[in-house]
Image 1 (cartoon, rainbow, N blue to C red):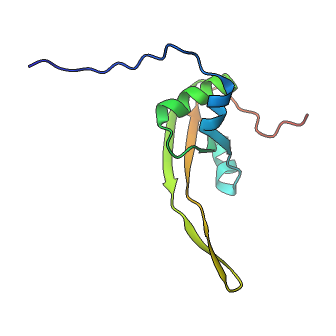
Image 2: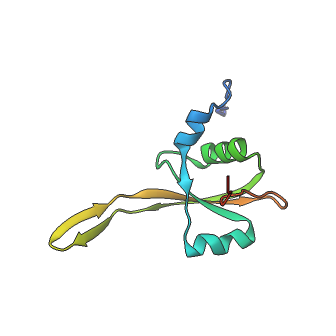
Length: 110
């Protein structure tokens, strides 16, 4: 029996616009700031992106080495303001663990 292997070859380098489409913005919450002590950073990412795309985007945008990525889908939630009912949209969260000595400066002052 012949085994079939699929090899993904990326012939074109990433451009900044495609990387920014994958990573929307960093997530700043109480839990996310506690994770910074363990060298873990939280980002809101495109719901259709996978871990390989997230890894390459983080490594190319911030010039760091990624060890591990955990992702989860956060479902949409019902919100109510007075008598009006609306929805808070769903999103995908990625928690990225970096190698020792690598950091991302999320709170830079220019």
